[in-house]
Length: 462
Image (tube, rainbow, N blue to C red):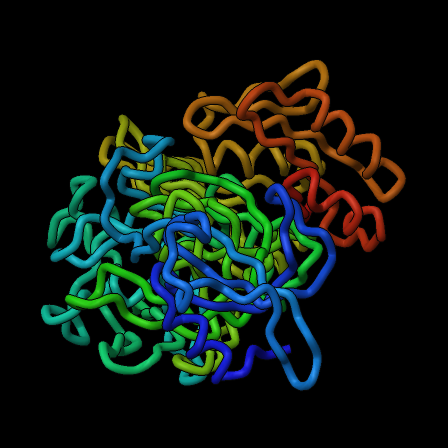
């Protein structure tokens, strides 16, 4: 249900109010299952401190129906491309080739934001990645064709050496009228980006939002975080663009799951892979604001996953091939005495493992044919996080240590899904991420049930 314009105008005219939305009433920060017109304020104050004209009514009339209001504190909501602190996981600040989503990126004139998506294909066949306009096209200084850096300038990215692509298009952020999206597409070479979300897993495309889901994002500053969708159809004033706060409408509000530098991250649901629902662009210490993907596609046209991309990694190993077995694994950038390993072959065994691009004496080995599922998972993890970071375990098949910590259990088939997920969860300690790896051709309702408890990693095995 939409909040009528006249109701929004009346409520947003009150002192301290920064926006309005449709959502559920919350008591002690818990949703109670009752529809409400949500009134967003910088900070809550008692009625005694407010002028009578600035007091929020307990109920409003929406299409002849009395609906309760719910005042929610959101703090100082601002665009989040100003990296004000180091990344929680140092790996997210470094140079990656191929680069996964969730790492540092930015125009030369900003600090750093986030490379939001794996490679996508536009309606006219261009290969691009998604981020925010204020990350790739800062107001007043950016032009189409500008070089975009990975990592961003705040993390050591420099023109020439660290260019990952060029600005293809960006939404205009108007000062005097409501905006619907803060988004940009960056033209890239498919081999320079991978098909994964760092710390989450494979990208499985886009889907619509669900109110009952747990949402995940992978960003430059705070890494992998989760939150809940708290309000839809938000109209809100956001700082960080013009001299006065800039109005956005039709966006959605989540619980706090981001910080400065996370702008540009995709927000989505882990369900048979990572399925993106929103593009994150603003937030505070109390809330995160993101644009639904249908508004992003209304700006840039339909965007579809591009499958001919570089594999996981960037620290020496070549990428894995596409799941249809017809794509070549792209080269990894090795920095030691020899190049990294070439990508694994596709499931039909007909593809070529490419040599890694080393800076030393020789190229690496070609990919493996005929790997078991567990071996394929091991290759995948080593390619993404480096061989030294991946070890076998007694309680789970693999553990990943370092900047990203995971407990990875492998299920050989549908009958093993629940047990393997339980092993992964039981093996986690503190900040570990439980990961369930399973055959990509498995179609089971168990996957959907456990998708909010573990990260899902569908894998093709020869």
